[in-house]
Length: 160
Image (cartoon, rainbow, N blue to C red; front, side, top):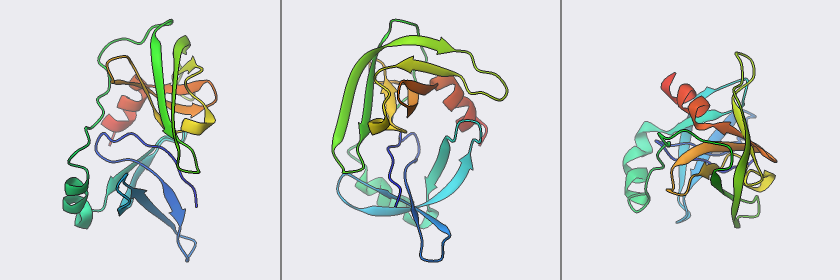
C-alpha cells in the first residue's frame, strides 16, 4: 500500500497493489468513501502522476465531493520571499500544514523539471499542494524543501 497526497483539479491521488501485482489506483475521500482511478499519465522527469476517476464512478464521486472546492493554479508569478502554505497528510492519516517562504526558484530544463525551494515542502506532504496566501496552487511538493512549480504542473496537465 502506497499513500500520497494529491491536488484535486479534476481528480488526482494514491496507489495500492492488486492481488495480481497489477497496480490498482484508488482515492479515499475525507468521508471514507473509496473510488477507483485510471492512470492518465506519469511524467518521467518529475514522477508527477495524473489520475482520473473511473467513468462508472464519476457521478458518485461528484456527489461525495460536492462540498469541496477544486484547487486553482495561481495565475500570478511566484517570487522568492513569497509566503507559501504546504498542505498534506501523513501515512498515518493525520493532516499537516506548514508555512514558509520561497527561498529559490529554478527554471529547469528539458530533462529537469522547474522547481522551487521552501521549508513548507516536506516528506509529510509529498504530492500535496503548496498554496499562496489566496489559497491558489503555486507548486506540488516533491521532497524535503523541493516542489514542482505550478507552471511545470500546468504543462503536464495541458499535455493530456
